[in-house]
Image 1: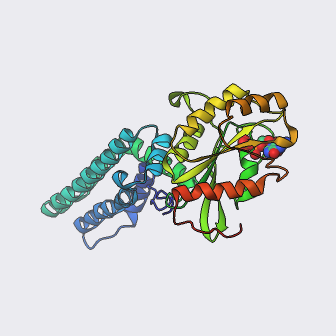
Image 2: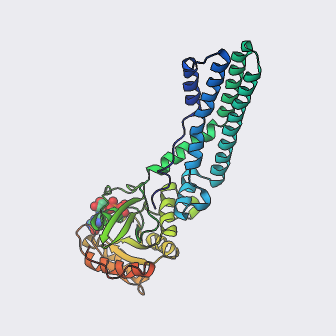
Image 3: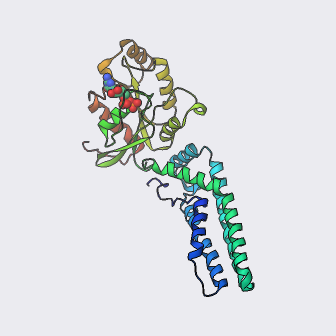
Amino acid sequence: MLNPFEGVTLPPDPEELIRRELRRLRDVQGVTVKDREIRRLIHFRDALQTYNRFLNSFPKLDRLHPFYLTSLEITAGSLDKVKRCLAQVRRKVNVASRLLENYVEQIKRSPEARANTLMRTGFGRAASVLRDGRECITWLAEVTRELSKAKSVDPDLPTIIIAGPPNVGKSTLVSKISSAKPRIASFPFTTKEVHVGHMNCGVKIQVLDTPGILDRPDSERNVIERKAVNAIRNLRGIVIFMFDVSNSSLYDAGEQLSIYREVTGMGRPVVTVFNKVDDVNQELFDALAQKLNQERVLKLSAEKGEGMVELKREIFIRLKEVSPDISDLLDC
Ligand code: GDP
């Protein structure tokens, strides 16, 4: 399944469509004046079909995968507003179309001399109904554009989600184990979007580099963090949780552990990793190791490639828990 928002036909801004139709008026010819005015209104009505194409191509909310439904909610801010706007646009386009058809009928029954006035009135009234829906149309177009830009995440593929606080080395690891080439920088919050890469190991495995999750409640999370939480909660995958045990760590043991506890509480199998062991801060390492003493922890230097073989072995063992169809994975 691909990003369902990529296939949406984007609607034009109603002002633009109205201007275009006004310019076209003089190009429309007819055998008689009445015929010409009728054709003008029909042309406008047909142009409104572009909004129906938009509405029909917009994914049905009750059939959206929870990952994409939550992505829509995060981007739009409210699913209710999306529903209200979709219904409003449908109503406005229907009313405007019916008005135009109604004026066509009036012109048919009227004397020639009235035809142009009726056309103008009908055009003006339909345009004004359409303008009432402008705010919703342009907003829905913006939301759709934003969502269609996001890399295609396939919720049906087995998935590895790399999570952890900002700057722990998530992008570095993703670029080492998958086809994704995220930007790596020595300052936090480089990852603004969920990056998607793949590992081809006989079976296609999706690898997501999530934006850093900070230690704060859901209600205070920003859009970037909520995208990360959405991926963990709603994709069929395992999580590699990365701790930063280095001297350059931006977060102390308590902060990192608190994020870790939250992620482990999301019900996904978690592979726990101490990253940056090439530059270890012993005090931080010991504090974390002591708190996690019952848990299996892998030591890694994503940058130097140390510990990668063990990590991959562990990844495949845990992936089988969520995707039993992954049998004997090939080299990758
Ligand atoms: P992200 O924000 O979690 O995606 O972190 P990045 O992958 O962008 O890495 C943040 C910084 O940590 C960069 O300067 C990386 O070069 C550095 N880094 C990543 N992995 C390691 C590692 O294994 N050892 C050391 N010393 N630095 C690393």
